[in-house]
Amino acid sequence: MANRLASATSPYLQQHASNPVDWWAWGPEAFAEAKRRDVPVLISIGYATCHWCHVMARESFSDGEIGELVNDSMVAIKVDREEHPEVDSHYLTQAGAFIEQLGWPLTLFATPAGDVFHAATYLPPAPRGEIPSFRQTIDAVNQAWSAQREEIYQGALRLREAIKQADAEAKKRDPLRLSSEDWQAIIAHLISQEDTEFGGFGSAPKFPIAPVLEFLHTTGEPDATALVNRTLAAMAASPLVDPLEGGFFRYATKRDWSEPHYERMLYDNAQLLALYAAVGQVDVAAGIVRFFRQVMRLQTGLASAQDSESVIDGSRVEGGYYLADRATREGLSPPAIDDKVLTGWNGMAIGALAQAAQSGVEGEPLDLAVTITRELLELHRVEPGRLVRMSKDGTLSSAAATLEDYGGLAWGLLELAVATGEVEWADEARELVDACITDEGEFAVPGGGDPTVSGLDAISGDVTEGAMPSGLSLIAHATLTLHQLTGATRYREVTERSVGRYAEAVSLRPLGFGGLASVLWRIEHAMREVIVVSGAPDDPVVTEARQHTPPGWLLLAVHPDQARAFSTRGFSLFTGREQAEVPTAYVCRDGVCQLPHTSPEAVVSELTGAN
Image 1 (tube, rainbow, N blue to C red):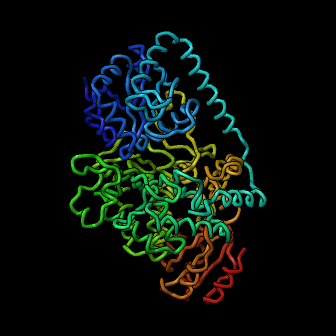
Image 2 (image 1 turned 30 degrees about the vertical axis):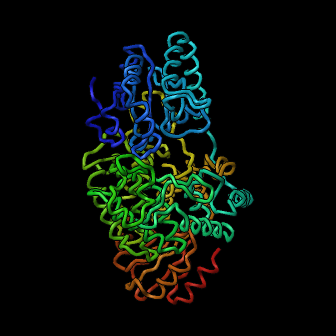
Image 3 (image 1 turned 45 degrees about the vertical axis):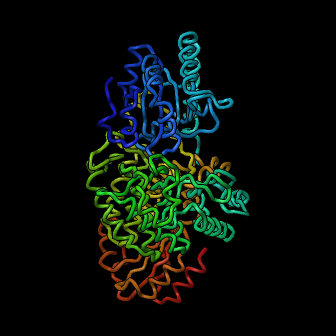
């Protein structure tokens, strides 16, 4: 049996390299083999720090008899959802026709054309209540494949066509503008979903849902801000945060934020770092910076995650390491690090570190952000305007970059430009955003994304946002900021067109579209800029501007040479503002500025009276 995963870049695929299942990596070769053999395809999707993925691997994929059964009757493909998010999104959409509670491991059975005809998540080694075993499922699939082949193909084809039709209709949807009444209803709905006893949204399992918290913070509405502060305070005081190493776990299994699922994800912690810094809980934010430096730091960039399980007394135990005190931990091996480097997630971390530096968070977050940025651009930018999705130990993955990568890194670069006042980072961001805007004025991945998904007659990616913002909202945030900096209307137009199509969905289900809600809110309410030109970063004009600029506004404090560099490079917001002889603040709306202010009192008056 060929070991096709041994040389994989993905740590998740490497974990399965020695399985008796004859795994194929994602690609057209596996589907061609299924067609040649005239057998169904098993597609197993997970990620390296997924607890139930580990469990299913130990119980089923490591079983020799099950491996033989799978190998004899189908072609098996193992997919790292974090390496191939387009693949994951494509198949999650199809799996939703079969199961309500989607998650990982995602277990799918498809025709050689890639169309799903049965789906499940974790399947146990023996039946549990109404849940069949993995072996029973394979037997049932094989029996149906032999006896009901035509029905399988017809049903899978109908599903594909129905999804394609819905996708086509979504693309034709006209952009909408939400009224003030719509926004009031959205905020009121989110406030009504708060768990008023323990904080956060809903019951158990309970996730931070950081995109929604970010949206509520951006609005600046008093009740929304209070909800954000309550939620963040409750999480910081709960077992969801590691008190020793800093960093938050992925979610809690109990409503009171207790009994966490002990994965620590880069994307969660990047978003929470930005939030805790923004609301002034700088000690919690400093703990996340410490976690990045001491646990997640790699030779290039930051790791994707840390596992929930560790080996204690010869057995794999979930959470055992994190439940130990400091002295006991010193004698334990820490949970494994998923040491793949993802462009988009690192971009989100860069932006969060830059924001943390602006808020005075300790741990030298700005130095870390700059260093990671230089490393990432050196390795993951393969040519001007073109990125790769992932690397491990300096080796690039063949996985196509996504809008998440372009948007996440562009957003992070712009936040770094804001924090440092250095135009080079804004230039880099503009190059990435420009590469993602088509001649028709739409967002698209340069090069077309994953070729195998495209060959399977793919649908567009799912833009719902639970734990993290979608690639669309990330690229849209970056593009809006470029509009503010350059005055170029095409940046605003492509954002309004692309995101406005989801305005109705945001209105109907705001908990699932926090990132896009933030973009739409910026378009309607927060296209405001504050420019402070000063030779002294601690001048009172700068200090007061930082303290009183409302959430969601763009604030840049630069010295005259930096303002001149921005203006020279085509960032028109700085044009005419390069010659300030004394510290000077400009308060602007969509690039049109009021008369300048040179006294701290005038700046405070202007900002506190703004609407």
